[in-house]
Image (cartoon, rainbow, N blue to C red):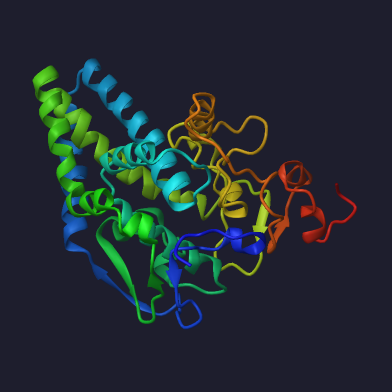
Length: 328
């Protein structure tokens, strides 16, 4: 089936994985991931050591601007809402541009990111999953494992992101070379602002984005407000309101678990979602269409409301699916 999304319950499947009847999410071994460990630790310690030495307000402004663009347009919209969940349609040239910006975040290439995201989401939706995916250990221990190790399941699912992704030569190129794409940014920044701009525009930015991703993932699966419960799942999601702006709306994670194909993660009044606002801007420019929302997706089976406001954003018939025929 590749990544083709169907109707009804099929609209909420993890679509790049195959062989799920035989796969098991609870048995496996945790091993050191040398390439990613060296990459992550080099940027982290580089940021801690060099960041204070090369701080200027101009360099800090470059850090904020590049982080905002790559996280919002790249990681949140390009990688997550477009490439992984297909929550809106857009021209292929725009998709590739957004995915390139996502690669510039420095966490990994597009094909690897899809595989990691989908295998993690599948495992967490099952009744039991490996401790490596449960976010049950203390914060700093979790961070150490997240940045330096990987899980190898004894019986993993197959991975097929579909020919439009795995067969795309540009995405294959980005996957093979994702680490190298910090070099042209560094050269351009050095030419404009010297070493201070390189340190804050590349080293501090990559370290901050990588560690923040771990930080949010930890809290979004361990504590915070909830409006929905995913029935039968080993791990539940939470919203992290304080991180809504830095994550471009990704921290409304309970909402996302309930409606993973929705382009909007912030579903209720006051929930800031800059990633969704960017998609709305693309729509106004004629560059995005067929935008998926809970109100135009099929009713989602397997979720239970935890608040009255939960029904205010759902598709017609969601109340009946959730066993609440009295709620419109």
